[in-house]
Length: 361
Ligand SMILES: Cc1ncc(COP(=O)(O)O)c(C=O)c1O
Image (cartoon, rainbow, N blue to C red; front, side, top):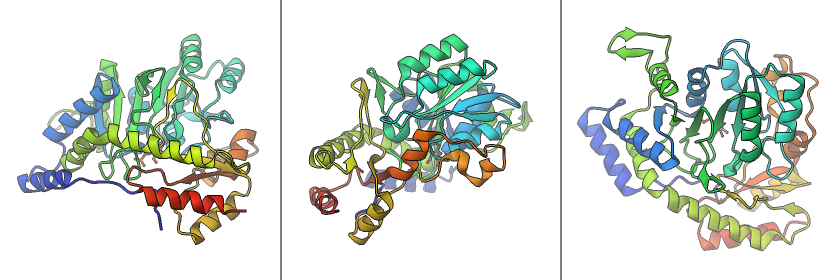
């Protein structure tokens, strides 16, 4: 089976993990701090707060940016459920708008239409899905016009660019995930980035039980800390992320070249001003479920990101989202399928993937 993801942990990273284990200092310490500084430098933000995973990073980002009880937050329903769950954690309510048919990202025209009808909406949580930036020019116009708090979910977009600038620096705060399938990993892990000093202060307090000094707790916080064990893996991955992303792009370019003549399969669309980092290489296929079965029988791993719009999940249906039906999201949920694009794919594996796909039908 050619897997959909294959995390690459270097010998050096393994040695550094052993060093941390031997040191006896396993929890958040100097390596977490170093990782926060180096990762925020890499993206271009001023401050970083490392977290236990991307979901806790989202929870912290929203709370630190002041999203709270009763607020309405615009967001996409075509994403991993963590994006909108974090809105619920803060006591706010997600307001779902449809995505763009080509980019799969939240559609600025739909955002505008919703804001015109509901000017009380105060925040926007966008997701740069699969490694492709949202339409930031249009989104920033709306953020300024309606004075929205903007949170960027960059869980799938480490190093992705819009107009030459990395995603994760336009909003009040941004979050990243370092889950093993992501473009870079720490095992489990996450990071909140911001260039706002107050948001940074609150984020650091929130991840560590609101402690300003040992056993002095200023606000209600959590234990969402990253460990130094995870941070040394992250530091090593950070040295390799540009190379990982380059290989993902090379693999994607190969698949686009070899598959784009197939009428029954639609390869990813990339706007000219975007650098896609292909966390996923997601294609559209009318007979998606039969195609998925066929890939499995032929030893090709795949993923369906995502088979059910967030508002259709039982947890949302129970919260008043019955009857919501956003046409593009519905269509994409039926048609999308992600193929292996990870950096450790060999030439032979790529050729096999193309051979198997081309023999479908
Ligand atoms: C878009 C998006 N947001 C948030 C998350 C949550 O990250 P984690 O799994 O690290 O909690 C993920 C992870 O899959 C994601 O894909």
